[in-house]
Length: 91
Figure 1 (cartoon, helix red, strand yellow):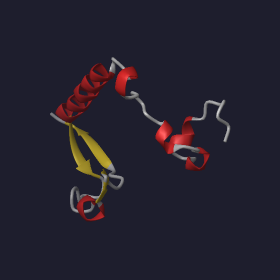
Figure 2 (tube, helix red, strand yellow):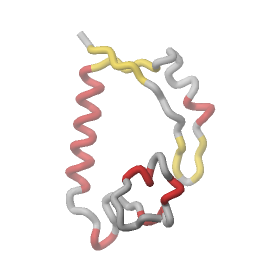
Figure 3 (cartoon, helix red, strand yellow):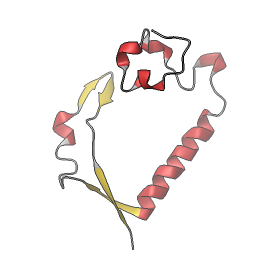
Figure 4 (tube, one colour):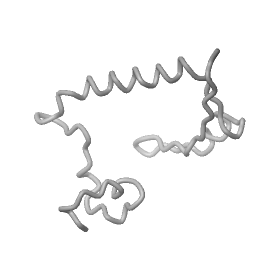
């Protein structure tokens, strides 16, 4: 399924291109794990906290939390439905 080509869509919009889904390990694991993972996670936490500090987040449909909980299901990891947010700058 075009293994020698750079096709990042295979992990999102074109899942039929995935031959072995276990091959996607972004930071690897074990002995060869990425040493930059803690730094990347720290940067992600800082980016999210910066966004939350600067904006009020609202559900685009005005029902934040009510729609997500019944549609969430747990099967080894939680699968959460898409949530559409509106970002309003804080004053």
